[in-house]
Length: 322
Figure (spheres, one colour):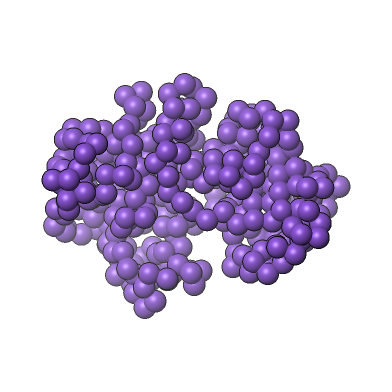
């Protein structure tokens, strides 16, 4: 089979399309013929080995030779202990917790990572959902404890997590302000944003407006900027961002939460099949849809990751493995 492989940290030029052996499923695994896989920021981070936390699996060289976490495809073979899936099932899921490997024609995955793909959902749409949409849902629901009628600001709203978070927040009756670059604002308005801010023209932390919940996908500011923009008893949730902000939140977040009753939290990525199914049902009911910016082939993974790293993606980038 063909797979996009890398064996050292670096930029996209370390990626090579190679012929490798088709894997054999273990007892609780299924072999999936991959039809589509989406690109996430973690692919970019693991490729470069930056930030330093991206090297936790392998300090000097990558632990996983094939990146790609959000896959959609068809079951080709099953292990002897597989109970819930069978051959020809169309499935999708986040495989980051069980070995990565999505940038390939086939991958073996533990069955618990996968959900059945609805017939009304394309493989590309299915691949766009698992990681980004689950992060958005967990950030708003678990950490943010979003309530109807609250004011929500999404910083970095134009990417994968942000576009899902906007739709989910609107479904909960929130008033949503989206912050991103000018080229993404019309798209965000079309998804239901009540207010949009071009971060190159306006600093939301200095405009005198306050929010019940801030969902931060990019995390480039100081903890004090975010605190300043929260209402009393407001909540800040970091989904992605810099190491310096992570350290600030770990060191100062508990103190701010205790003394000012403004909750400052970091969302830890937890792949969750039940949440995948919640999002799948929202899609089927017409209440949620992935935004797909560009589509690439397996041989163009290098180009796709480079485009993601430039920060211009509107929604998601998807690899079609046909």
